[in-house]
Image 1 (cartoon, rainbow, N blue to C red):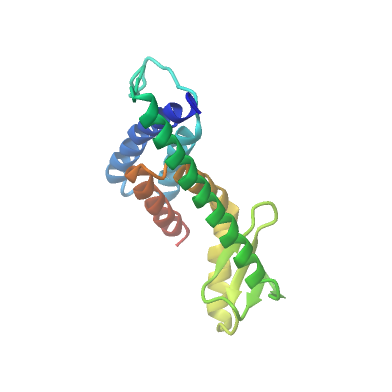
Image 2 (cartoon, helix red, strand yellow):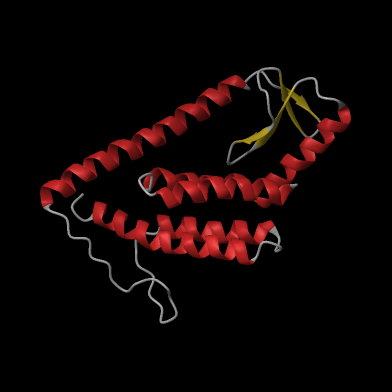
Length: 193
């Protein structure tokens, strides 16, 4: 833990630089396809999850970052970090299990699954993801929603969101990671519309 927590802090700083670059590019490329912006967010997420430095003569990243913390403060901060990171991870797992149980009795329809226990359409799963929609939608609306959700699946958005959420769980203390997760979810939706 002595080296792991400082590595997380350093990675968070490096990731923040990438997030700031993506935020700037998001403004500059506002007329570009949203899919392009989504891939830039993926790069930010990967940088946040990559515990090793990336060195390049063209990099905007500082070569070395040394965060000096007294040992007792580092121990306390590391304990708080691990407790909250695990709590966020467990919350995610329990939410996934709860949602999986909620749609357990869903009925197969062409293109997805229909459930009377949900209020909005979504994709659930990673290895064999399924599209779930609320019961009782008009046929034309159902077709449009299924097409929208199918686009999410075809683009791998469920994986992009997972990378973003993993980065959020690890870097929960970094406000830029929260902002980027909110914006990636928004950009993913806009890319499918």
